[in-house]
Image (cartoon, rainbow, N blue to C red; front, side, top):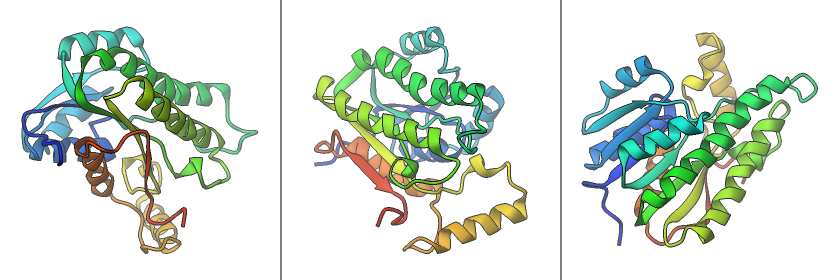
Length: 239
């Protein structure tokens, strides 16, 4: 039997845009009490205007453990923790800088470590943690070496935490290519062309949408028999 989200407290880290915002919208629509966490107050305010339901905003940099600790105290008991935050840099391995790598590590890995460390004791016994990995961990792509390593780290972390934190459920959601604001660095015409080319290579014939991943995240929150797994939502990239 599915676990209802109505009245449950859901913390979405990275909730100001893209997949995180889509999760926040869908959870709020199900009646959850959503806490959206992000680094930009302006982006959080803009996101809130698109969410129909109860949402509280938190401007926090998860790279700083003291800020995460204060966030956990501020929010208190929760039911579900979803971590979508990432700071991906795609460059050839020989060109990627130490500062590039550190920025990715601090957001993706250390951010997750800080959040789980401070929220684990506040999670309901039938609650869940959902980390976000990605297809790069399973399908090699030039320029994505560090992204691949970090995505793989989320999978290893979630499997171990599923045992250590049981009965709290811990899973990793692994998206493929998803059309989100993370691609805004490309000019509009180039972005559309890139999405079309990448989508045509997939069995489903398109790239992912934020709502595709949000639906999967809601499944992981509400299915009480799913833990320690990696859920691939990638349009068949690994087929």
